[in-house]
Amino acid sequence: MEALFSARELRVDERGAPAIDGLTVDTRGERVIILGAPRTLFEATSGMRRPARGDLKIFGEAAAAALDANRLAGAQLDPPLPPTWSPFAYAEWSARLVGHPRADAQRLALDALTRLRMEGIGTIPFRVAPPNVRRAAVIAGALATSAPVIVFEDPAIGLPDDTGMCRLSFGHETTAAEVDAATQIIADVVGELSRRPS
Image (cartoon, rainbow, N blue to C red; front, side, top):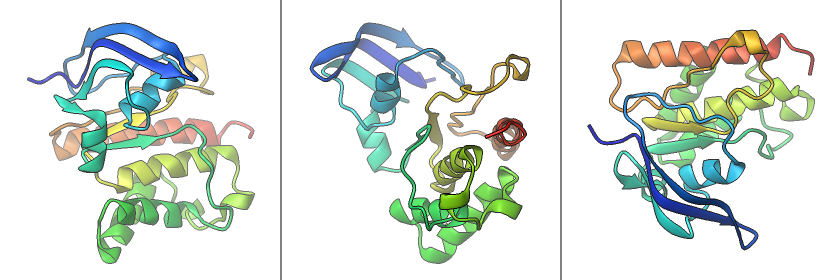
């Protein structure tokens, strides 16, 4: 089995200085969570930042190539979102952005919102949406791409300690039941966030 996440002598710079230097790791299995890593590692893993040195691979493929081929999607913690858009519009746009036809994109967006238990709030505009809804919308957008690997930035931030380690699936060649279990975990995390004051 190819390593889900592997790095060899990885160096990633931020503002001309190393934020990560000398990282070498191989992971196995279908799920990986890396807590306490700098944002720079999320950016490199999700294909948004190129390594200055070394290799970073997702299932043996460079992150940027996996992103370009829709085998990888990223869910940032708090990206800028168009104020007039809704979670549904954002999820649909995310699916369209990677090449899904309109009807498929709408179905994928609705499915992503349903998996995250967002059916009742999927049409509210971001300008009035609380931060937890905005965060859930970004996760829905990543799910709507139907990429088999999804990288989350700071998946446990803001969660109470008793929620435990939120195990988020990177879902390579998983069964439908495993994907459902993973999205159930994500839905539970989103549900926990929605119960917290914004």
